[in-house]
Length: 144
Image 1 (tube, rainbow, N blue to C red):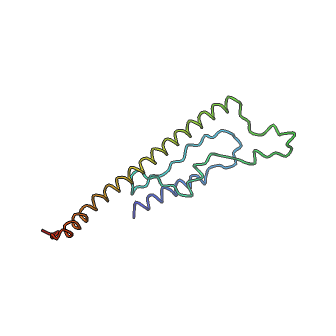
Image 2: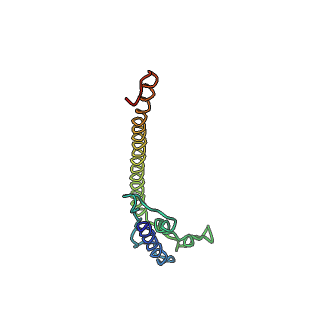
Image 3: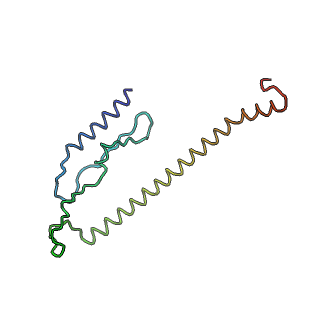
C-alpha cells in the first residue's frame, strides 16, 4: 500500500509542478523540460499515465495567437516559420513519427509473443488432463 501512496505522491508532485507553469507566454520557443512520466513501482517498467499528467505531454498551443479578423489583410503578428524552419521541423517530426511507429510495432510483436507463450503454457497445463482422460478411457487408473 505504501508503494501506491508513493506513486500517487509522485503523480501529485508532477501535477502541482504543471499547475504552476505559465500558460500565457507569447514566445514561440519552449524552454521547458519534458514531462517525466512516473514508472509504476509495482510493475517494473510500466508507465503510469493519469489524466493530470496529460497536459504536460502536449505541445504548447495558443489558439488566440492565430485569430484572423480580416482574411484579405492578415495581421503580420501571426506566428511565422521560415521555409528552412518548416523543412527542418517536418524532417524531425516525420523521423520521430517513424520511430514511434517502429516502437509500437515492436510492442505489438511483444504482445503477440506473450499471447503465444500463454497459449503454450495452457497447452502444457492441458497435458495432464488429456493423459488422465486417455487413461480413464482405456480402463486404467490415473493414480497408479
